[in-house]
Length: 315
Ligand code: GLU
Image 1 (cartoon, rainbow, N blue to C red):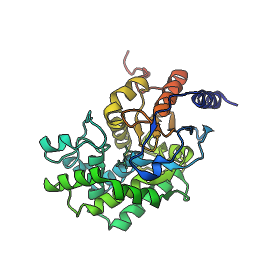
Image 2 (spheres, helix red, strand yellow):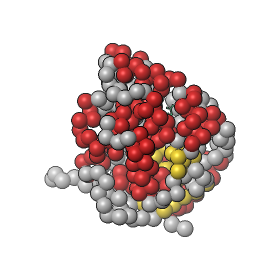
Image 3 (tube, rainbow, N blue to C red):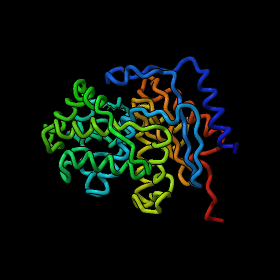
Image 4 (cartoon, rainbow, N blue to C red):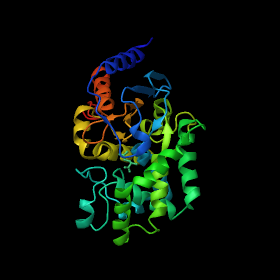
């Protein structure tokens, strides 16, 4: 076994012993039944190596991690015009908060809170029919991961449509400001379905590779986004990827990351690795309790951090 594989296996063994595993999200019916005992981790290195442990091959609901893929597609579709309708600042508020929208005229703080992602869905619907838009997201994620078996869990999507009253309120409120252009059922339907993407840590780490490698998919050599855009998506992930826990995640882990209420986290060590962790128990901010702990241990042992000194050009 190489060193990184040892580290991943050690972390998975340590996580198995942790008693306080957080609380599984229960407001989406299909998520409430997932056992908090699960833990999976997968690291895909820039050299193509794969290191995994625990439940790394067990599918889970990626939920808000899908916001990274939705944003990437929308930027590719409308470019920087997107930023007229969504901000780029951390919200410091809960993932589903409505309060800032009133004083900020229906413009969500960033694309990684629910309001922002619903606007992104609405933007995609300006270019694609609803089915096409969903097909585009699925095609994009499958191509990034190089895995055409990735599916959307219809039961999760349906459950969320039936219980997503807050998201409905967010969409209706933003429509009143003119920042949702379609009947709210349409962007909400797209948003719920993208959140219901079912993936495992291995697939997710593969899908995140373009963010570690200057916007290129290393498997195909094809450019997914420009190097500058990859850096900027990473910047948004580190500042906004964990809702009102983003500062804490940057402090403890020091890598761009995006969490979802299914308990997954996608983290990026630029130039080095794409990392996915999953453990369904959440902390009080809605981020995976063990996921963040595992990433913290990983960076302690590898020294990976975007704040690591780089070779100076000066002197
Ligand atoms: N689909 C979830 C919701 O809208 C996503 C939230 C999350 O993963 O943080 O509530």
